[in-house]
Image (cartoon, rainbow, N blue to C red; front, side):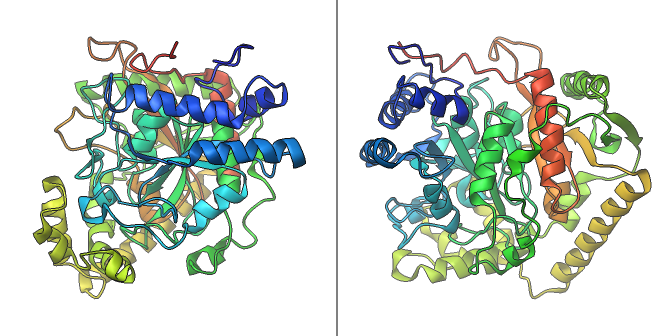
Length: 494
């Protein structure tokens, strides 16, 4: 907190910029304070293990931003804003490990496209976030740093694979964050850590310079504490990149700014389908279902038209029989590793498995993926199933006249450390490639390990390129409910 009263914890981009204009803080001051929080809580105190590396030049870069503001004014909508960047996104001035000891010394030749876009908008890459190694699963454990802890309940995982970003954003380690998402990986930590996560339509955000899991399903997007901040980040990173041909589909589909959709009456008149097959009906689902009922009641009271949808969609089936993540991992990750040349000691999954430099927890998945390929009948069959699923969802929304679908991101609470994540619903967005937003829907009942409860996330899914509609719904819901609360484990520093 500055002498004039600005408090960094929970501060939004807008609040930070307004405090800078008033002279209550500076780029350097907020950067140093975020670093101080990381030093206090990431390896000490609750030991969240959310941050792999703090940018050693962050303070110097912040000082340069302060000089630029004084001399020329801000250069972009994220000027001087510190970013927590998932460590599978390349940075030319810092190692990019993908959470793996096997890449502990990998220094890219250049920034990823989205890193460049963040910097062009004025942001500072403050730190690289821990993740589930190579983004291969959902608990956020890596050989480079170990298990990320959920700051709301230190006995639980923070979701994953972008759990370092989720936990770090929840704990106020940076102003905004970036995750990547192949099956659930932006939205899972957002749900588990009371954050807002946007998985964009495939092709809206470039994957160039991002370690791949599946080029068919990979994307990157914001993990932030508010919808508005997530939208500012999305504005910065969206758009065409010739190095990622999929982004050609974004041309003509990106508005001048997504901020035009930040409307407090964004729920009024929206037809939102409640996808009941993605809800649980057992005792372990009670906390999530209670939070969802409160959330749906709030939507209805704010003018949304809720439509019961009984389409029998089975997300376990989608994850195991439709999603192509394991069938693409060998081809896509090996192509990336080979492109690194001598900068990587290992260029195949078999070499990674034999190296002893990956976490034991991903070995079985790596072994399975090593026997799979895009050049297979199974991959082609799954691709056809994905196309059929896209049409099924589009027809469902057309028949019922829906603007969006809504469901809990995870049917039950994020699992305890040591268990595998279960009953997540994010595969519906990733298998179709459609956009989805997860945002806070409240908390479970408090417990000894979770003094304010465990966060619960609500997910909205829309048609391709309907990010604006989803943002309008999400923003109105957030403004109406205000469910976001910071965790007790990382209080303000004196």
